[in-house]
Figure (spheres, rainbow, N blue to C red):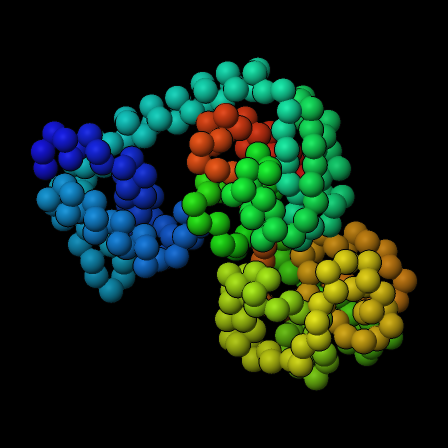
Length: 299
């Protein structure tokens, strides 16, 4: 590789490589990086082509670093560490300069989760509450500086910082149904009951994620159009029209006629993440730190 090619090398490829090296598994690395496996594999092949070396030995149980891969990892670690220190220093500078923040909060979580947020942010704060896909659209258009969203979600062309907040999905069902008497429920047990669910075009990535789990669990209910407002949804459930599957924080809502029950071995889960444009990542890195500390205190 020529000197010009080295200087044009995208540092993101090096960070992707470091994560894959830590995981020794392309699928797990893709999950950490909140991307699908095929583009990550392409990035690694691109890096190998640019460097002119083979970084991994590929086998049925995963990946193993080659000698060249070990050497490359040793070379780039100081660079990646320095990059992180640089971002932290810039974020501290940006925090002192920041005058206002336009922040989106996803309605995928019960809003009580964010009750302490405003007290933690010492800038003029404008909060917009909406669905995660709509918040991502507003971030891309520059109408929001950052958005706290629910993952998995389509977030191409954005920087997404995963936060240590995970919620299992639980069933919300009418209190008068026999299933409401059970301590926990399997998805297959609910097959005969109508499910309030969203159309795929509203959130394709999350729809496909849940559909795969539904199929694995033998769950194929008839679906009703899900109301956009949660109070309307809970009213329909209390009336007995159907059930819904929601993040566990919604169990904090005490709605007469509605009970919440955990789901057995479904592995359905949503994770919080902070999404922003790449050019805002350094400026608002302090926000990621505040949110990480806030969510950690909940545990």
